[in-house]
Amino acid sequence: MSTESGTDEKPMSAEEQAMMKEWETMAPDEAGAKSDAVPAFDANAGEEDGGTRILNQEEIDSLLGFDSDSLGGGETSGVMALINSAMVNYERLPMLDIVFDRLVRLMSTSLRNLTSDNVEVSLDQVSTVRFGDYMNSIPLPAMLSVFKAEEWDNNGLMVTDSALIYSVVDVLLGGRKGTPAIRVEGRPYTTIESKLVEKMVQVALSDLSSAFDPLSPVSFTLDRIETNPRFATISQSGNACVLARLRVDMGDRGGRIEILIPYATLEPIRELLLQMFMGEKFGRDSIWESHLTHELYKTDIQLQAILGELVLPLGEMLNWKVGSHVMFNTRINDELEMRCGHFPMFRGPVGQKQGQIAVRIERYIPPEIEEES
Image (cartoon, rainbow, N blue to C red; front, side):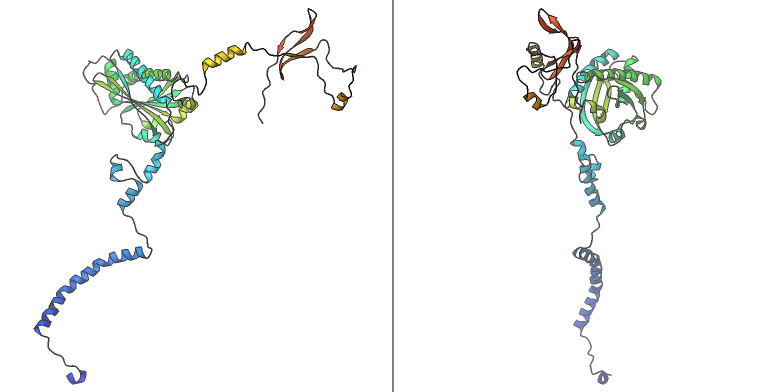
């Protein structure tokens, strides 16, 4: 066989056999390494060739703002931050702070008279929220009082939490001072509890009306009381609302009252609420106005009695000479018109008094209203 093939097979030495065995043991590791490197090579090749890379769940959450910090109550980022940024920059109404400060003083006095107890009312915060977000955040059980602004023809919402409900019931029914109110959860409010809270809500609405009186007279009337937020919907979920959080303390007892007023309800007095301080008149000075009015009554004016009017061509008037006669259509019994400048003021018959021509004023001529084109 060696002569047919032309080659001579030599036996391997001991060193060559040892090297061959070493290569055989290393072969599976190299193959496994190549198999593990293939997916990474393909992914990199896809990026270099212009292929798309699929985002994982963590990258998608961070882009939309649903990261662990935002889900835990921290600040949102990404797309959700852009969506919610409109609420931060919404129009502020400076006069609302003064109105609610006035409400706090009025409610402190009214609730003291109602409960015959030492009541302290404090304003925690005035903020802007979306209606739907707030309704989803109301801690239940609670009483939602829907009230109506009669002059503005729109509604608002007053939310009384469970702690204040039981505190008011305990105080009005003669509970001991210095002991916290007993809260019974897991049952609907009784008729007695609803009536007692309704009485407190009516007192608060009366004080809210008084707080708005310096700006604009308005009457807030209680429409109904609901315990389910779905039945207390007074606006669309995306509409902006003003939220005032009040804290009511009665010794060791107390709770919160939250007043929610949509911006649509406040639209009729929006210009008044944009004032920086109470009584701002945007440049008006009442003292100067009174002085100017008083001096105007002393002003001398010229009043003309029109005996007659005639429209003639200019050419005919140029032909007039001394002694020419001009005929008017005015008769003796006709009323003459009296003018102040170019404005007609009065009408009356003409006569004679103490040798002079006189006109007796009998009728006032109202000014003409110019129609807008």
